[in-house]
Image (cartoon, rainbow, N blue to C red; front, side, top):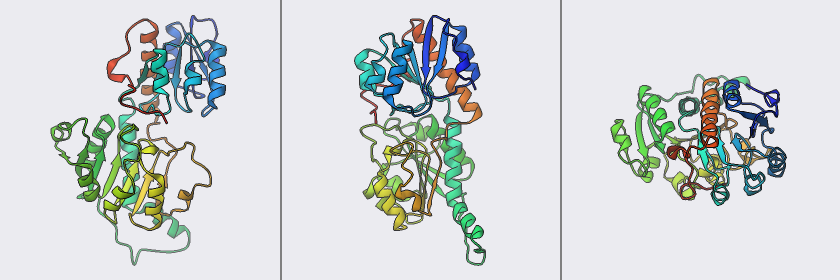
Length: 335
């Protein structure tokens, strides 16, 4: 990983990364293309990020964490491109960027396998009741006489969204012997092509043992998993979300977990990040959480940074923004 020492102030172009680090190879790539790299700590308030962008006169922003709002986007008159160190761009005001004529690009596919692995890990931990067993034994109990486990092979996983991450999750799930259902109206044939069963969302939530979310946060997917859909789920089903927090109605999920209406949930993302320390969700013993780190592995961190760097270099060198990676106002919504 690289740090602030990578910025010399002597190169012709500047970018700001909204984090303390990115892969050193990406910094070297940017430096080799006449670009200095500056850093802003994770989750720095937007007004402070805007001030930093204005001070530096940045040509590009590489987004890792924190909100990139209109104030940030309009802070530097030299800004030509915003690139996400990852895939989800719900923390970027895409409409404000479009109004400035600044493309917002995603590092597509760079962390797909890492997120898929994390999704499967959360699902297996919950399916095998590992957190419950761990807590019981450490508390002095020995639940062996009454415990009956669940099988991974033969269970049904329902994938909501079938982009690169959904496909990798399906591939891993199938290798473990799971039956794979897919809901994705954007790619109706893709599931069948992979040997999986395309279904409606209502069919998926009612049949799946594991409902795993892999869709972007848009106006259409916000609160997609609401109280009504949770009520359709099996009583022993679980929800896994490694996508975006706003896809689940957290109040409805809290109610379902409290009532043991479903068996559990594994969350790597939340509607507010970082979530409040006094969130009522933390009292739920059937909830397993991680800190939005599904896509952060050694391998994926390098791929995300290098992909983002190549996007920045390309646009700053005058090439058109990559259409496949472009985030559009019509598709996505800022949080």
